[in-house]
Image (spheres, one colour):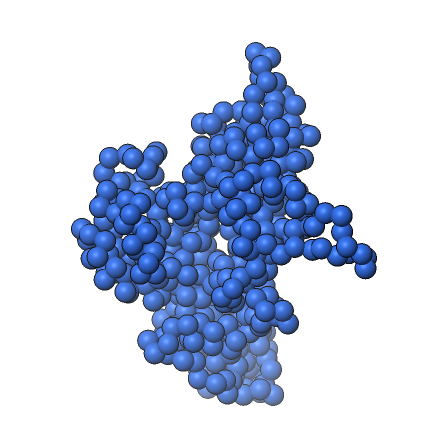
Length: 468
């Protein structure tokens, strides 16, 4: 049997690592800070990738690919950008046994290399908007690695766009935030998120505005799950990206960039996992249902195979587990660890009564169901599990978010959740004080949760938390 998982209440970080190990999601790579994503972990990422990719394409962006290696001089062109990324850069100085004439940076993000090509591709207003996305790996030299959350190499998508006006760029950045990121996180991952913009201290290096999705994890800490940036004309001017307007004048483009990564796998673990392992929302799960043969003989194998076939025909992602050479207890624990939303257990006793047992991973309830009713029961279980996980996460966020009036009260309140307080009570000085206590302003928003236009907009609130 598997080694017991450390209870979340005893040691949340240890619990997180135990789940990753025992659910066979990932291992540490041979170079510090790298990771090997195992098949089950990668299958979860593929589901996320597919859902986001569909939404990205619906937003009008096309996929492309750009080089992993970037000339160091490219990063020097945008001062704030290179300053922000310098501590995290991995730099190649030798190749083919010789010292390179110019050092090469291993891609930390692709603003610079993509914009060098945007300058070639964009000539006229007719070329705009240019909407590009790429799925790739990036390298940021991480000093305190943690699997999925902070690794020196990780997988992600990064979008880069160019527009003719500042308003068009802003609306597109917000469309990505809303229609790609929030939609995927809430509808697929069943994780509610707060949206708002980052403070000047926290925004992306080289951006004029960073919009963010912030989720609350099971221990009350925040996780930045996706960001969409307005870049203004900073990179356009650095790389000479101009277009001929309809009136014939030469104008600089307005730009956005946006990204979400394998950090989302860590979010799902920490938002939904329990002391028995993962709990996967059905829309995200690589397998929605496992049909588990308890014991061979007395027609059980044929019945289990028939149930699996009928569930597949109904459109579900199904696996038949008929490995009776492995104990039933071991197999059921393994599938529970992996978070498969529904198990259908088929054994001789139930089958003799025309029944099978349906087990929901979300609440671990079991129900004996007539064979003819297995399909409808599984369908209901999947629908209800998707919703119940979201409602559970929403209740946690609501219960653990406290309104406070001062920075000192905020530091105390965030020991197990979020704090919200007027931004005017924080300000730049208060933000520095929070940082000294390991606390950060996760985003700024209006009191009703809607997005604000500027930091100095009256009545803004700051969402404050400890974060991963």
